[in-house]
Image 1: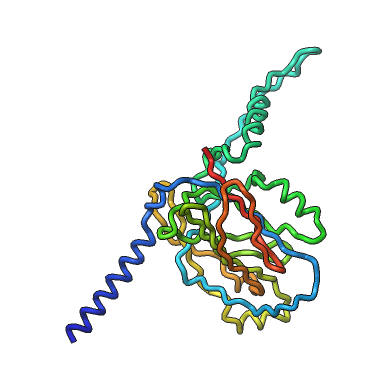
Image 2 (image 1 turned 90 degrees about the horizontal axis):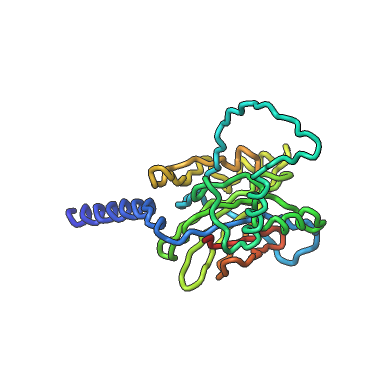
Length: 278
């Protein structure tokens, strides 16, 4: 009996240590990178020989959720604007600054992190480094732009790596979401496990209620820059949005900093660019 209690105590200690290990912030000492993602749905309707089964989405895993940059409320004080006289120029210093900024941004490898965005924080500005690709996708009749995300984070070694929850949000009844695990060895690598979910019609709601592919409580971890710790965060569940995951893309690949990689499935995919700012 004492031996059984000893093993139970040992298992409990192991589980406690494992959970604590997941919550350490040692990855803050690793090199910081910027990650840009574009979510794509393939629109071309063609007969596929491969049969796809509805995937099972597993949220019972440790992952970091991305936060959104909150813009401060600014009190705008009106000032009198003097109309210039004829042939009199207006000095606007910020125009020169913007030109200098755009010149620097042409070299994506040396781009610096925008202030005041923190790590694991998304900024809704349209500054994705793959903007030209996004414009091409929008003009294409074969692809649909579903969404994008950009953020900064340290990338640790494989042993210390963790998953990031990525999400396109809903675009015309489609949503691409899942998990990204970037890590660094001799080269950069990334593992992805993502899903394409489609919004259902009213007569299909019963399918959702009977399906086990959705989770009522989805919890990830949000990084607190102030306390440098990870705090639990509840995420919206698929069941409330009447979404059914119908396709899954799971792949592991070695990548290079500054190169665009396309992870593709016959029905959807993502463009991923990882760069190391100076």
